[in-house]
Amino acid sequence: MAKKKGAGAPNPVGIHIGIGEKDRAAIAGGLSRLLADTYTLYLTTHNFHWNVTGPMFNTLHTMFMAQYTELWNAVDPIAERIRSLGHAAPGSYAQFGKLASVPDAPVTPPKALAMVKILVDGHEAVARTARSIFPLADKAGDEPTADLLTQRLTVHEQAAWMLRSLLEE
Ligand SMILES: [Fe+2]
Image 1 (cartoon, helix red, strand yellow):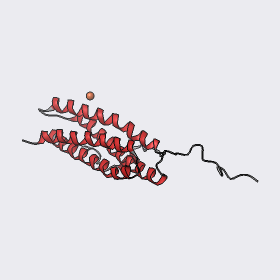
Image 2 (image 1 turned 135 degrees about the horizontal axis):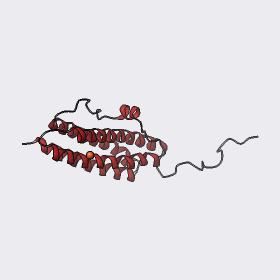
Image 3 (image 1 turned 90 degrees about the vertical axis):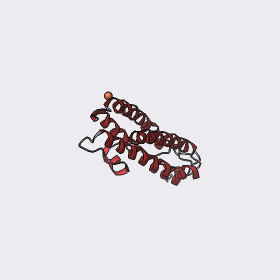
Image 4 (image 1 turned 30 degrees about the vertical axis):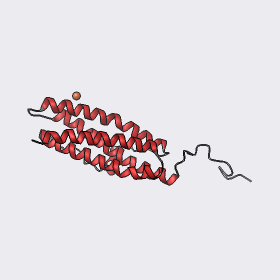
C-alpha cells in the first residue's frame, strides 16, 4: 500500500522558525500591503522627480531623488521578509493596485507644493500601514518583522516631517 505523502515524517521543506502558520500568513499579508504602499509611493516620488517645475525645482528634484532611492531600496527587504515567512511576494501593478492604501500618481503633474502635499500624505499612509502590522508581529514574537517595521516607521515619519516643513511658513 502506498504511504500517504509526508505521513509520519516532518515535511522536509516545512517552516519551523517558531512562528505558527496562521501568524505567518497574517504578517505576510500585512507586509504585502506595506510592499504595495512602498512601491506605489516610490513610483509617485520618482514621477515627481521627473515632472517637478517652478522656483523650487533644484531643491525638490534633489530631495525627491534621495527619497525615491530610499524607497526603492526598501522594497527588497520587505519582499524578502514575506518570502522568509513562507509566502509569495506580490510584484505586479495589478496586485499592488489592489493592496495599496496609497493612491496612484495623478496623470497630470501637480504644481510643486501640491506634489509635496501628496508625498506627505503618502508617507503618513505608509506609516499607518506599517504601524497596523506591528501588533501582529509583536504578538507572534516576530522580531525581524518588528525590527523592519520600526526602521520603516522611522524613515516615513522623518520624510513626512521634512516634506511637511516645506509647506509651513
Ligand atoms: Fe534623475
